[in-house]
Image (cartoon, rainbow, N blue to C red; front, side):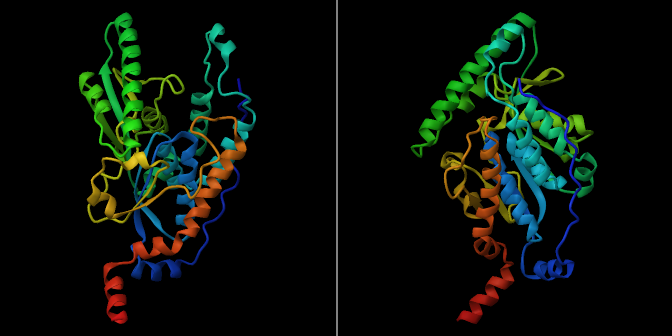
Length: 333
């Protein structure tokens, strides 16, 4: 198993940038934005880097949404721990030689190291008080499964649920890749009396609850175990909606980060038309659950920052207030 050592949080850099400049920017730009990061395991570090760059321009995250690992990333952006969290995760990944420990199966331990490493990084990067003080509206998407029942029956039902959901999701992804609208996963959810759930900042009672909500949205057995809270089980929110754009206000400026075209198949075209959606400019140097590739983690994060900078002109154009756009149009005419 990986050696996960303690690591002190580096001194936070003081926030820089001209406050006067931000005030003037706010006159012509909608500088309070809604920001969404899709789930995708390690791929979500791309969204973290993109968001970090947006913040450096003086843009403010008024509302955020995240699914699975994207939930951890949007909260890190609120906390201002982007750089520290990436460095911490790089450090523990560098000490992890494998993504699967076969011998642990015979010792009653966990074969996959991902969940422990993921939880450790969440705990490192979360600043509960800062999240609460920020006033940022948060949406974290997950799926709530059936209540517990008899232990033996429950174990069998869980195995069936995982198998049926996984099969439906893979078949849906195949069809979405062809541009087809699919509903297999939704049918499985209905058959098992499951429903989609949006956690918000109103649910953030303490750091342990925040951590559990992120894990609820990230539950992908067997890599990240079936999460439960009280008498309820939770599954990864990406099974039904991996980029939560629908929770934001109808006239908000929305920037959404995702990694595959299939993520937005089936979404309302009118919603997509009013969002600024971003996918990586090239293939990401890491896969979702490769927790051995520290170099890939860093390069994915840096690519997010680089792509944001490359798109800066287009993003600022998108964020211009209506009166500015009208004035520019009149001047051209």
